[in-house]
Image 1: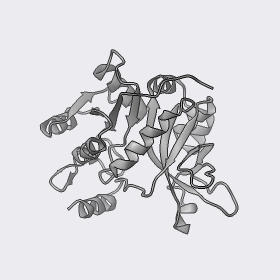
Image 2: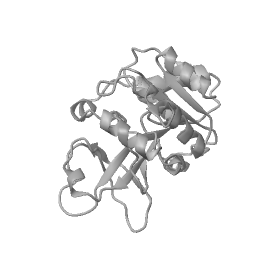
Image 3: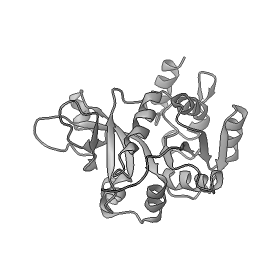
Length: 249
């Protein structure tokens, strides 16, 4: 049993970059009169878990965030992932190490329920957990076989709302009847876990599945997930953007 403290000072970092393949410039895409990254900033602020910082690679994104009253840190545009981007921003924003729980919230979830962020942070109350995330039960059969829907392999007993994630896959696993869980791509890291994670090379299973979180599992880090009731709309395409605009009109 580990004896780590319960994190007391969370900070939310949102990575953002303009070079999206399917929707170029999406951080600045207008949704209900403001850029999408500002909508994500607002959802994170509504969670009320700690300060919110946008980790961006372009000055125009930083300017949009600051014009809306938010905080932004410019990071190297050549960083390979959002995790690397938030860690680089964290080192600039908090070099003294004041914040001990780091929430990585995607910059394309403008309709995210703030309760999901709070549920994810609460999982770190367990001292054995290195990283937390969120899942939602799959209720539509088509999602079970859709490789764009990442599945979290975990067992929840009774009325449990938190469980240990054993694997993540784009395939339908496990086989046979029973619950399947849609993985929601946000994380809360203990600070030391994030530092360790970004220091590791890409792992074999991570490369095969194209799922970054498998790097943590392969090196023995523990990921637990909170079961939540809704899957947020991720904006990856022009059609997704129109849906988000309709929801937030």
